[in-house]
Image 1: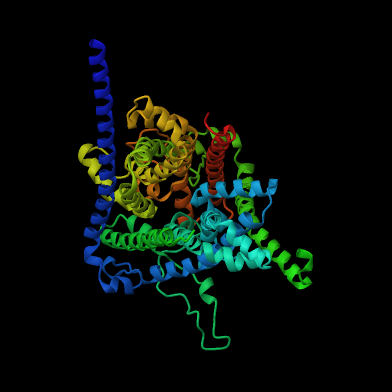
Image 2: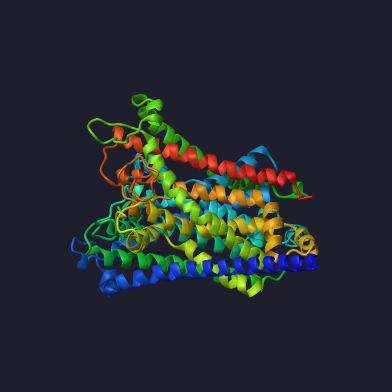
Length: 305
Length: 301
């Protein structure tokens, strides 16, 4: 009888512990949600007076009330297009090679370990790579090109890993059918495998770019300036060949740099500006992450195999 | 058969294969590039400052008239902020991972994950702003003596930033544990928590440990939060209530200012980054090694 009572007490205790754990886990989740909400609300509150159209349409200024983020968000768009131009072709090609072509060899293992490692290299170290290699050695200076190349290499592992995972989900039957009607390996990859994997690859690209858009340390390190009162030259030119790549060489600023600069000023006037720039940046990354989640959700629903 | 392909087609196929292989080699070139830049720019530095002094000096004043180069000073700031961050991220991340993999099912899990993804997506510079402008004032209400810049608030926010990372990596490891182990525990009358904590967690421990190690590597490499909220004065301290510079803070601070190219001050950032890179590399390789060992041992028997 006492044995039975003791057993009952033990079971009771185990159940209580479990309830306790669940309570802690829920509190933790609530806390995290509260942190995010608190961050968002405090930003919104501080930023509110500055969230006017002219904040987005004016250049930097020494007076906080007149300073805007025009050059910063244009710079961020310019940076993202260069970053994508670097990371997407290289990353997708590397992913295709590792999944569809590479044989099991030392070199392949080396490449794989290397990619895993690159994903863990602190972003500021990429900044020094950009500073030493692109800005100084190749003489690109503190241009949008230097920053775009640096960020492109930074998100390369993300794109490679996403591409590989997406390709791996394509069933072999599709490849075999393609070979059976006489397609070569590349024809199979280009016409069957890649189209079948494109939603997964696109998700990875968006996640990579949303990481790049908020990266501050590497572009501060390559020497990007904060005070820019002009836009990069237009990519369309009135003369032949009507396309100009001067914008690639132009000095630039970007949203994270401007946020950092305003946040680290002792002058309290710039607090509202810092909050408004931070809010803009957060909304941009949240929108990109949301798009990626939605794509993944749609992908899972529409998958036919 | 491949031999029946027209010659041009075959040439193109192999050209494409080489192109793709070239893209894969870009990853190796990036690593080599990083190593070459860091070592190349640090070598002249170590010619004028001995490695011994670099590792043992107790002061870091590279831009003073009487320069001293003790990387230990910066490392102490890095260690303190990282320890605070891990003290937050490891318990919380583990608890969340256990909750997500062992308790939350179906729609619940689907609605919890976006919260973590939202947090993981916040740019670090925004977290830095949050640490300086929201968390520090809150902490000062509890400890009025807390300085405006301090390692504590930077570390706490960094911890929150790392939670989703540790949680999702650990959750992957916990999910990989075969169902039969859980069923065995339930058959013996274990509650879900007992099964999770005494059976699943130990079985997945190497994967979870790898997640912790990657969290450490994230923490030591984090830059913007400490640069904004922890102050930028180099100080040999393990006290989180003080302001101090970390390795990453120092690099940002120098790169942002105008230090002439080729000067000793300019080279110090490469030497500091080399120390940081080697440290992060050690942790990354350790994580990789832990995971590989687990895979070699194969299925849990």
